[in-house]
Length: 234
Image (cartoon, rainbow, N blue to C red; front, side, top):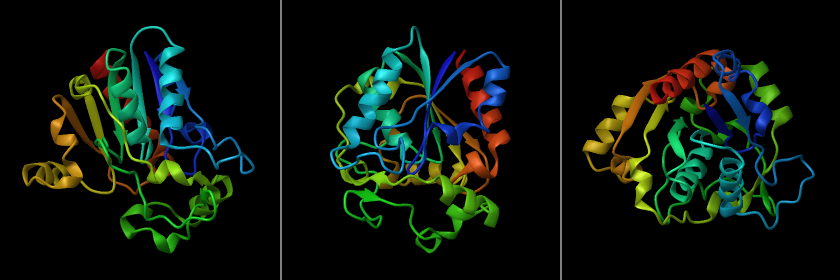
């Protein structure tokens, strides 16, 4: 299976390096993506919006033959969902890593502190305690050293969707910060945060208790969780 891995904010393709070995060992082909504006600290970011990131993932799908699995971490979840909307007949499964689908008109995050045309990785104090579970001092230092400013429009542009066949794409939620039972309770209660998730017709939930960056705090376990979801697809 071809697996396209989409990182969350401030990260490039290399952030998946410790996650992919179990997938490669199982014979799958991995395609980590570096999204536009995340190529380097000096890359231009002024004119890059959410649709540019979606289009980059759609291009990655179109460059492959046959069905693909999309994996999106954090803000990457919104991007793979829009890519599933653009290519619902090509996506065999969408795997959301501590993330989920973002509905029409939603934004990924319009509250992060901006600097000009970009959003640098904020101070740790900006994040909730649940975000930082498992991210010790060494991992924090390594993350900050590799972090690339995020194009600010990606965070605040509104999601655009058009094909309801996206609801039929099999999906896996890998829940990290909060247990999947909380998500299902929110769906049952009609919480707006899970409104789009509630519309999906085939969803599998997997718990991987850790903070918001399991590719750093539990990379091997995340790789195995993705592998299990891919095997369920195949």
